[in-house]
Image 1 (cartoon, rainbow, N blue to C red):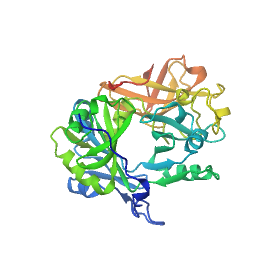
Image 2 (cartoon, rainbow, N blue to C red):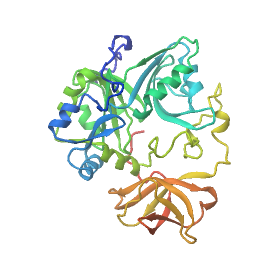
Image 3 (tube, one colour):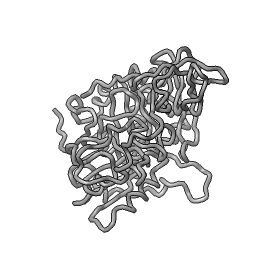
Image 4 (tube, helix red, strand yellow):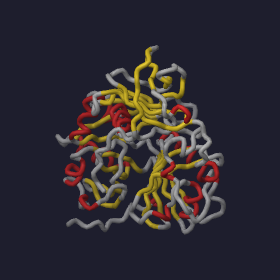
Length: 387
């Protein structure tokens, strides 16, 4: 069995990437390591939160189907990646997040939230715990600068080192039922024993890599964090594997909606609390110290709740479409994410509905027509079998 005894690259030895921020006043989108590949493919490229990223390579539906049946590959290097270490780093993080890094083991990942003093959600993040004094934090691309500033503001005089590794490290996701078989052919890590939401270190095609059993698709899979200098070679070799299909933002969005996964800035923001957003399970009980906004994250007097909806047919509910009381026609909520779900052969939506209307019969107004909708427990589907 290949050894897992590999050291993560020392953050102090990873150079900062001078091109990972859009120049001040520039309208030119930033580019990831994969931009030359995307142009040559050619992929359909869009400006996504200031990044030039592919919306699709061979079609959204084709990429969606490939991920559900084989192995889709996604470049998500636009996300923010911070290294936080030092003897007081656990106290520092637990002061900021709804969860607790003290309650997870070394080698485990934690999905959690940053909240403001009023309990509003600032971002949803994943924290990878290397040791009790060493953490790797992944934040949403649109919130990278704001999250960095928020964390810097609360360091105070504690002995904590924060390094922005967003430019120096790339992020590649392999997702789907064949993801493990594919990755196993290119890594020295024995993947079978790597549990869901855990991580380890090894090499992928010779590149030192943090390998995490995480993802954003509702499928088994892995996220790879590796030096940007090695990323294009790794990506290109994986893309040449006949089991692998490069996938764009469009397929990723459909996949995450089917899996009932929220998108920050669309399904939640700082006007929503964890309870409203259906994320009260992220709030750790009996934390050793209070976190920012703790007194306001779980009060039950907030007027709306986050829900899933199922509609018959292919007409797609979109962000902002009204949710109606089917009997009275009154507006009782609003869709935040929605569309046709190819895996389910009908349309789905997520959004917020007034508490007093949770037991009513619902409809969604699509281009002036009220289409019946049924409340559906999230997720709509979950193919993750790794435990």
